[in-house]
Image (cartoon, rainbow, N blue to C red; front, side, top):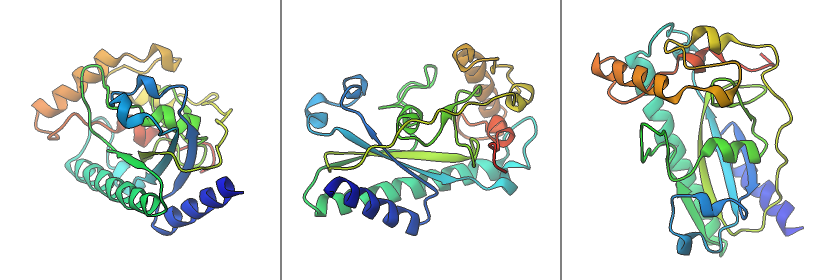
Length: 224
């Protein structure tokens, strides 16, 4: 009962704070793959995954390249998520448990697009969506138009089941990708082409970091 009660309490708090998606994953079998000290992870066996949707109006301004408005929005969304994760982590700690908030975006290696852990993978495990052709997490209602953050914890929580959905016949992202990096299957996603296009956007001063978002604009989910 504690697992269910804790889950519902945290979910209610997060939705009240303005988050759009909430899920919990069991990470006990994969946490050794994280770029985090094993000592820190020793008792942390759950991941709370949160998502905040992006503005469709700002996304719709993009066609072949990111805009400065989108880049600003991207930063603000990430900041909101980091603050939400910090707040939830503090609430968990006040209840006597451990919590480790992982930043919404903190890339360790840009060419490999690797971070301390994959929020997308945790999103799949916690039932928030599936990995689409665009190599991003896709939610049935929001598509890829959201950002993620995760909190690792030892708090007893109910676990969500992974989604069984997929992109079906939709290939909008394939046609829209300015780098030609998106293929028929996510396993064929060309990280190198994507990175080179991100670098060109930065070199052209289109944005200040390696950010695109064109495929995010294309991916709007199955239930619109």
